[in-house]
Length: 460
Image 1 (cartoon, one colour):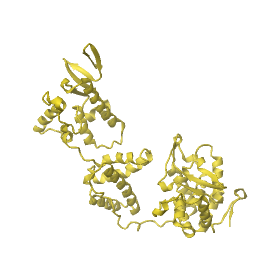
Image 2: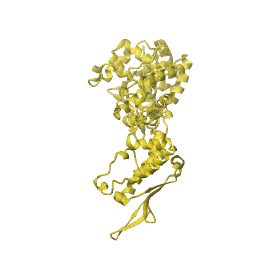
Image 3: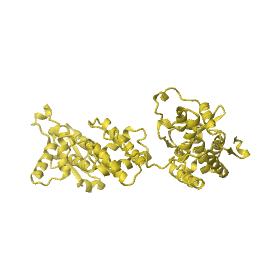
Image 4: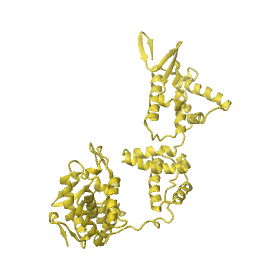
């Protein structure tokens, strides 16, 4: 820090030092970044002819603050390492990308159009380039002075997070990054402009060769394609969407046959669950009665079990408060599901016995994170003991099948939370709880549910 006196006023300037009367911006590089930047100190000559020394130092300090923060604080930094190193090379000379295109204004031209930071970098670069000893980072830094580099795949993910409503959720970020990294491993960290349809087709062939199911590859493509397209549109990148209308060969032909329980089988599973009547079996019973996803059931709060006109129902909704964040798979997943007799009793008992905010506290951490995978493991282990191959998701296929026999697709979708393919279904307020309850009662005709006297429910 140096103190400069002008017209009798002394000003102390941070990061400014004097060496025999010549002023420099000097900044220590954080120890954790010294190997990466190959510098312990950033030292840049300041020129009074370029204007206020204080403003020059403040601009450099602001740029370096941002650079250090990015390199230290973000383990999933989306900018490529080589590009980041090139930016750091420019920053060490007080420069940033595109500075080579900044021509001196009329005031600067009075002093010969001096650009000391640019001149310093160019003098050093030209000499090293002549000797053939420039690094890749220095070559890239030189290019970045005059032409912005195209966005590469590793930079697209952060754009997707920023634009997506769930972009701040740890699980969503982790899951998306997993699939995006698979594609980068295949294609390399290339520019979005360089991704061709053949690149994607090769990815599909590679994944199938590794033994992945066609449904798995379709899921991967839907996520990877969404990241690519969001970055392409958001950053106005003039290229095609290479994922558009690409299909996986023989899609669905290798899928395992979905288990749909007969009404006799469903009756047996419900009776076995009711006999144990603990929280794991209550999850089973609520899934069996609604066809809801296990994550939707396990993530319920006590307040999400409510009643209207003597009808108990589950209110599947998002939450974002001091207790944690609760999201749902799609917007169509936000819905209200009425509970037929035995399920209403199960939900009310669980609500009454729940000590806190959460309906199934066992599967929620202290910070409000719902562990649906753990619940799924416990539930599926028990279900497979009842019927070989049975999983919690089988209830979803079962209820959907039952509803198909007794009601319209629109009403069925509003119960199960499937996205509707019919635009007309998006108009209006949806069907009433009573209409959905009537459909569920019709669907359960033939399911033999004879609970104990305490349950007060018998289905003929």
